[in-house]
Length: 38
Image 1 (tube, rainbow, N blue to C red):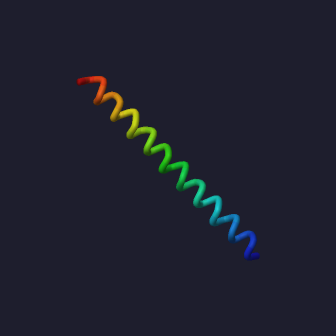
Image 2: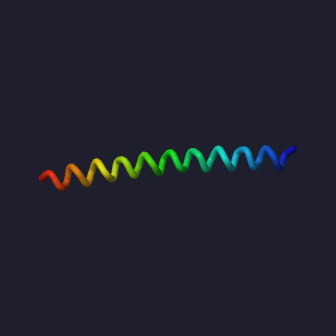
Image 3: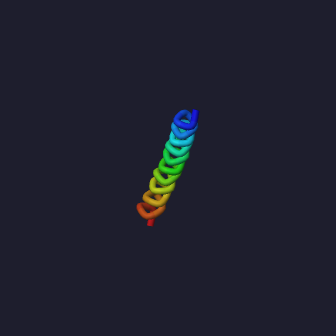
């Protein structure tokens, strides 16, 4: 039971990390566009 719980938490953590990484990638794209505009 505890092992399953750990795996569940691990998956949730990985999903969050992926979401955060995607957000950062989007921000990077926006920043690059803004820099190129100047």
